[in-house]
Length: 220
Image (cartoon, rainbow, N blue to C red):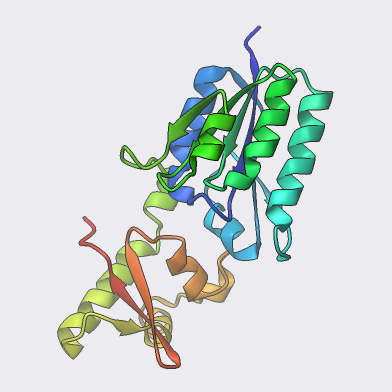
């Protein structure tokens, strides 16, 4: 029988672009008993296409996500025979939780970005750095069905207006006029939420009272 592995992701802190890598490393340790992503309403939407994870809305209060992860991770390791816990966050506040779980004889694999402080890295049995290899996102998240039309619309605006940035309100109206797309009918509900979930493709900028969007790179 393979070892059981529990995965807890701080969705407020870890981008969904790392979903594929997190799952791959976790599965290399054994069989997943649970894989959860915690976050507020906006960050949870960014993980909507990461089908290997259960999404948990932790509320919008200060430290709500941190507290809920601590409670549920502690309960899980005390009530289930897991051999490893994968804790994904660049937040050093989780170092106390990591040490507590290790004190129960459980292997703790931390995962976070380069900004993660030494306190968190040393609290884990081992620490995997996110961002030192190409991200692996579920295909539906990496190449949304909407993206080709959105990218084409932004490029068309760039040519016609001689400006790299397109007002988000203009994008929304053009997408409806040309493609009959109403973002409110999707799980993202707003164009801002949709675009913010794809930071490797789109760059958002506030100019006065208007939000604009431009292409961060030239997607294929």
